[in-house]
Length: 342
Image 1: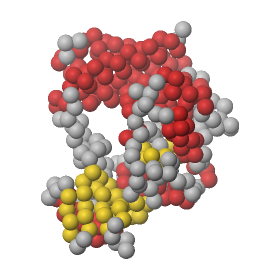
Image 2: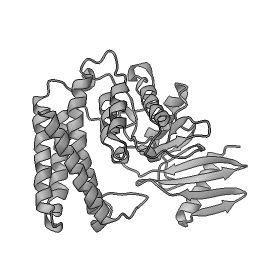
Image 3: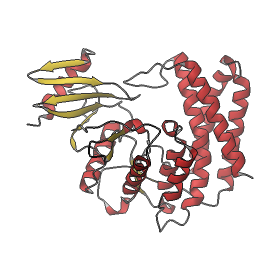
Image 4: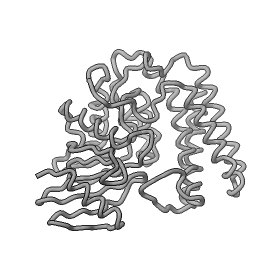
């Protein structure tokens, strides 16, 4: 029998003891590694497996956003995610907001993808984007990072440059050069947004469900060779053009071949009633390509200075590898901006 409160108490015990595994009354709770923000536990109850995700408590309401997205997908009869069970934001049983859902069986995808897997990724994105805000009554809010205003994105890039750029210039051998290259990229984004003849404003965008996080580590390729996704805390209503662009520039998809990225773009079916879609893609490409440079820089900074914000999971990384990735991401952003302007 599903007993969310009892399960939460067992997860709370395992979490408070920092235990990788905890068994009580024939229920086993195991900590699952992975992720960079939250804490995930697998519960085995009478031979069935369930998931309990503890989320960072902040203004984003991560657990609620994930739960309401899962509910929406269930309502829409889309078999793209685990079935939701329970949401607890009280922080009384466990000290963090928590969401419980059924465990998915399978393994995550990783490059190189087969053509069938790549097609499944695209098909799942199309199904997600088919869900329109106007068609549902739900507590789901806008997706994270969909701000519907170009200036907010260029402002964020400038803030990231101001926060992490001086550290880069002072602590890395090639830091001053890399800082200047990043500053030029931010300037280029400012120029593109200022000259844009399209707007990402809510009234101009066909708002649909957006996943936002296309990290293949959050895919589950099941025994039935169907693709499903976990980790929906970033999801919500947003601009499908931005969601599509994330699939091009996200670090976890950087190892896809150029041909596979081209295939995804060429075969994506944009909303028929969204005449500005491709023009917004052009602007988003500039912003997101440059933003990922700063996300890698922030990761490098955290290897020396500790987590940049509250996280329930911490991963050590090879600093030299992160440095190399930063250079590669700066180069790919520069190449894109150069080719798009000629």
